[in-house]
Amino acid sequence: MTVDPLTSWLQVELARMLDVPAERIQNDTPLMALGLDSLIAVRLCGALSEKVGFEVDPMTVFDGDTIAQIAANVRAVRTT
Image (tube, rainbow, N blue to C red; front, side, top):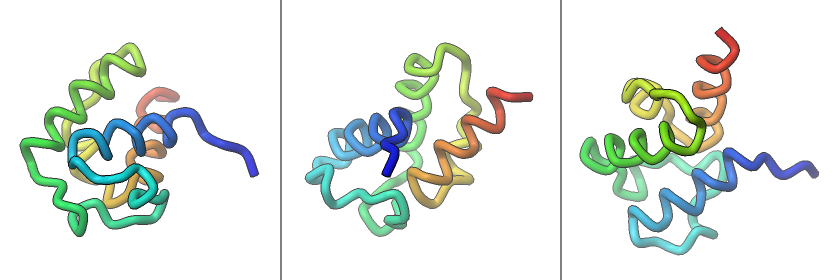
């Protein structure tokens, strides 16, 4: 199984922001169930923008229910 660096980073970063163990956040874990709110989503968006080197629209995070979806949204923006 290949480990996706962006998804791994999202898992660790979001765990830090939500103050939960990273193991609780799997690729398909619904983030709202873990306490993701608009403030944390905006903070994650800022950190994600720094990580990928371009401005990530907050809707990229808001439209992703899981870290796998957020990573896919970022990749889609990166390739356009």
